[in-house]
Image (cartoon, rainbow, N blue to C red; front, side, top):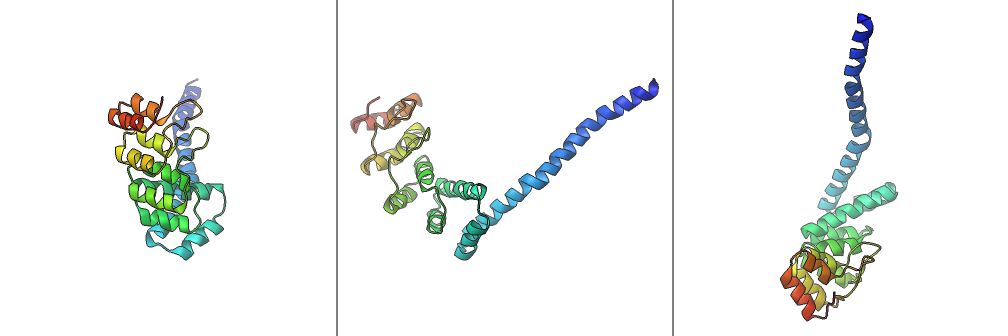
Length: 188
């Protein structure tokens, strides 16, 4: 009887160890390689290595790698790193629309201007993604809201849930943004 209790206690102690070992193994085989890939891609972008970047996009083909490059693109747009955004888009990265929306949410006017010159659709959105104007209004980025309205963004585009840039600004308490939108034809 004592042996059975001792064995059961031993098994109970081993369960967390086995689980921890499995998680470490998963991290080493799945997460760590992606971190290495992301770090390598970021280094290539920082170095503006066109050949390596295009090679990376063609050799590492697949939806996961394209998503990774799009995530990095929006990250650079968020930081306002126009040179990195330009480099990535000039060399085959997709996702300019999401980069534009991200830049609007951070008042990154230089990136927004360049993307508009490149031909981005100012009121672009898909499914439940907000427009750039909705994003800027939601987070109270008055400079971006003004920029977008001045460049022809429609203040009355509605998401599938009926939300507009004006309703988003009001709900978040961005009264100056809401007032500006109303002055430029926005309705709730």
